[in-house]
Length: 186
Image (cartoon, rainbow, N blue to C red; front, top):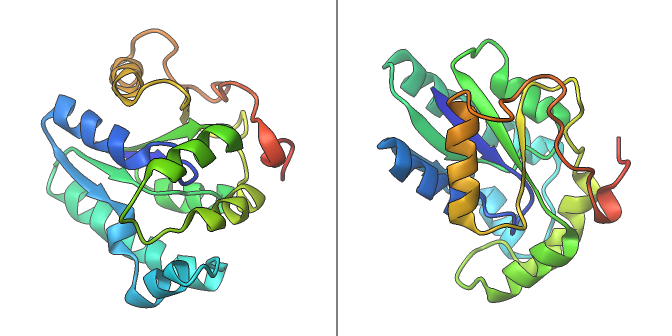
C-alpha cells in the first residue's frame, strides 16, 4: 500500500508522514525532495509553481509510487496534491494507493511555518497554496484529517482509519468544512 499524506505547507505532511511510516515499519519519502531543481529554485525565490511546473514533478512521484507498488512494498509519501486533478492522477489505476488530506486553517499553517527553518518553501508562498487549493469533495475516496491536532495524534488516527477502524474512509468522508480563504473554492 502507498499512503499519500497531502495538504498545504504547514499542515504537517512530512512530520505526520514520517510518524506514520515509523508506525507501519515502512519507507517514507518527502515529495518535496523529488521536485526538479528548477521547481526548488522557483519556490526558493518566492515564485509560485504553475501546472507546467507541477506535472513533471507529479510524473516523478507516480514513478516512485509505481516502483514500490510493483515491488509489493508499503510506503508513505508526503505530497501537497492541492488540486483535485493531481489527487486523481496519483490515485488513478493504483488501487493500492490511499490518500490522506490534512485539513488546516490558514492561521495554524502560518504559525507552523513561522517556526520552520531551513526549508526551501518560504512562508510568503502559503497564500498561493490556499488560493490554489481545491478542498477534497465528498465524491473523492480519501481520508480527511483535522491537522490542527498534534502530529502523533494525526498519525495514530490515520493508522486506525486505514486499518478499518472508526470513521474508515469512504466517498462521503470529506471531513470538517475547510476554513480560511480556500473555503468554497472549486
